[in-house]
Length: 494
Image 1 (spheres, one colour):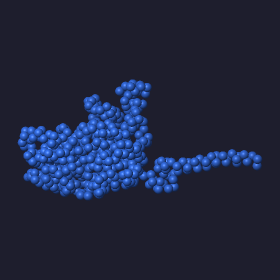
Image 2 (image 1 turned 45 degrees about the vertical axis):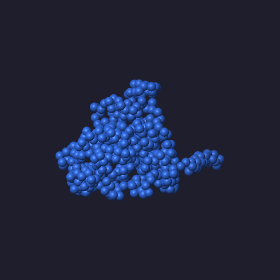
Image 3 (image 1 turned 120 degrees about the vertical axis):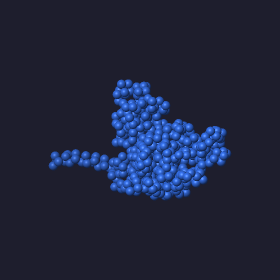
Image 4 (image 1 turned 90 degrees about the vertical axis):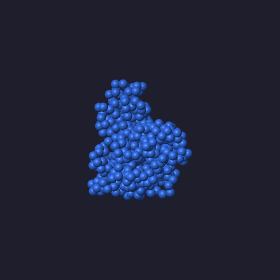
């Protein structure tokens, strides 16, 4: 009996320690909200806890209706995001209108907040600023009234040219004679009209490509490859009549792909996309449509790069740069398959109210965009919110490149050499985060193709020095990293 008592008393000690640890764990889990959100199985009310911890989004816009946002709201709700008021605490602000003039709090975003526009994006989407930029793929344009005389001189030297006058706030345009141009109209421009468009069954059209900018300085931009928005003029182009704008201007009531006779069979009977059925038509005409898309990518890449410096200057007054931008670049094609840029839209129409079949395109675009920028379904295996750091996704080994160079220059001891700029030991905290975001974007591109840094189509002929010689230091640095990754893994080349 005496020998059993000590054994019994010793046995109670581990039991008491276990009970104390269990109680302590329960208290800690109850007091730490992040523990419940990351480990919901620890709570008997897991469903309620997960709902309470759901990420949130708010909508900013001046329109009294939201039919243009139906698909944005629907996709976010299916992702598990909960809507709140714009004045409440949110993780994502989806702004249909430019928010930075009336929302001063956007200058100091929290690390778990993101906005769907960059301050200064108007340098790309302002029609006057963009179209009067001297770029070879933009039809010649003149700002009014400042460039009145230059325009008159150009019109005199090109008597066969036709012109359209455009305004920032007016969508409707019309071909005019030089004598009919309103030279006193501020915030407008006059642009040469391209007279030999490529036609499908006699109809002029434009194409809209969806583009996402995820970072500036260093610049990263992507183009959606899942499909392209094709919009056809409802009236045939010939015989040309400047008074009938339905012959050459795409309006809200455009002719959709599935109603164009020669495209209908490819779209309805064989399940093609807007892009692939157009390509099938071009091939039927004995031409090669593959020459179009490299031009499109070059135009978008060059345009964004030309305006990056202006956006960077605006960003200097913002403490955090948690922004991305979904834009639609509108372009058209002439009869030789040469591509021209028309404009870039800050908040592209994502409403299928006019054309219900477009709903799939808009939802797939949004799905790709959101995944790219770190807004992902709560059930996704990545489990991270707004690109939160996770070693399961991105660890040091995923970012480290060119190990031989780092070792040869002793970059673990000193970072004073340019050869050490991308060595892990020499990265600043912000640089590490830049590479981390670039890595996670690559993992979650879905149907997005990288535009900048420029894809490396042939590693052997790619001249890194030539490619980066006119870049900013950070853009050259980011391009070098993608080049290093490409050398190790071909999936990083494009």
